[in-house]
Image (cartoon, rainbow over all chains, first blue to last red):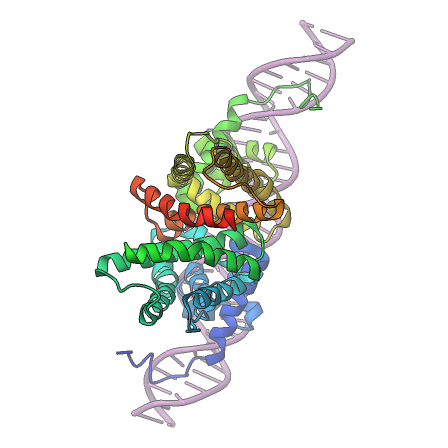
Length: 206
Length: 206
DNA sequence: CGATATACGCTACGACTCGTAGCGAAAGAG
DNA sequence: CTCTTTCGCTACGAGTCGTAGCGTATATCG
């Protein structure tokens, strides 16, 4: 399915540059914000020329999207044997990721720009939001296999349940850490999971 | 307490200009975003000279902060007769505020800048976050007075409950409307309130 | 009334950034 | 070796930020 991924002839691209550039982008975004981030500064941090950035990403927006998407791809779904444990593990992972200042500034700056740029918003949805819903889908499937949640009555209900669960989990954690500015302690994660579990079974049943 | 507020001699400032400039800032922010907003454009929209902007606000950041703060001063809390009605009213009010494109871009842009500016973050917390938490506190107190919720066992538990409820409500609504991009319909508000009510009593009791 | 003091609109300016183009050199494929 | 692509470097036009200067308008004070 995947195309041959690039040209066969000519000098190959520096394989290390992509990671260095994306890391430098997140670092600069945390220090300077969206408005303060400059392509020249990112290039200097990554140790490459500015033209190399534009050779790999068409604009500043696309570069930042790629940098944030790469960061969020680290999230994984662990099957720990119970729905409560799985939820707490995912929330803890997400919270740990959002505790890094570079991720905080990157995510919010990206979301802010996405509210005005429909194309960027679509890119964010396709590259960041939709891929993360896999965590909810996987967790629900595991719980259903264990008998903790009833099977879905129809496909449409299952999709709606995934959407609202994802919005609730992601939105609540993001709001606590980025807007309220409070850390996600183990006690808070436990309490939030309790709050989530009760309606969760109701949704699946309804 | 308030100082005489400005000089007594000389030509007074145009009283209408402040409102026109702040409105023009929010309008431009919705259309162009934080990065695309230019002082010259704001000045043209407001019908004033660019120098007038800098005579009243020291920089673009300060101008945007002032514009958003003025917008959020509209938030109020109405005490209806039941916990469900109170929750739905608050959610609907919040959703209505977030449905305006100018508020969407403005709020997220402001939050993004706040992640890297501690002073701005503190101002956002004091001017926006904490006042809204008081809405949750008032709603809980009213529900407890009506016997819909049990009284708090201790102050620390009550504070934790307020925090988690506030983050869940605000975070979920923000995530649905700004990230997922779906409107908060009356049906959705009703369903979300139902979901929130069950665990709400459990947490308050625990 | 005149003198004073401030706000206003307008223009111009230096410094900076975006995104592009051109150059010679480097590094792999055929 | 030849061809192709990437690399770093430099330079450029367009656009923006924030400031400064100018003449003018509008207020208060003596």
